[in-house]
Image (cartoon, rainbow, N blue to C red; front, top):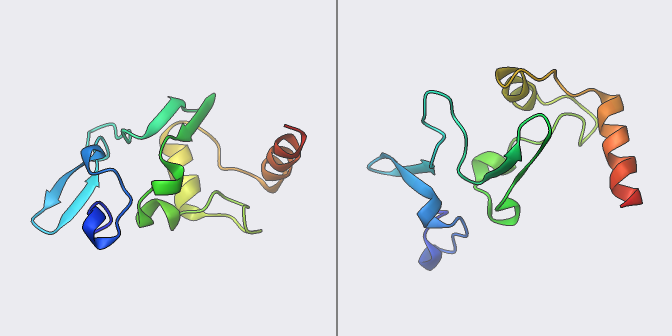
Length: 102
């Protein structure tokens, strides 16, 4: 539904693939070493979602750790999977300060 414009979906359908008869996933996320097709940049250096305003609900449901004042176990798990440490509150404060200066 999220990739069907006639139903109000905003996820670009060309970036998805069929998971089963009723569900889609972002291309690349079912690979042995998953990497979403919408991820731009280099993980651990500078990476971002290329369709952030149009990202699927499963992505919107996983906030970065500390964005709302608490850790995000799913965010931390994803970071560890890619060899990165979990985010700390100090990381988030530095990020917000840097964003405010930009």
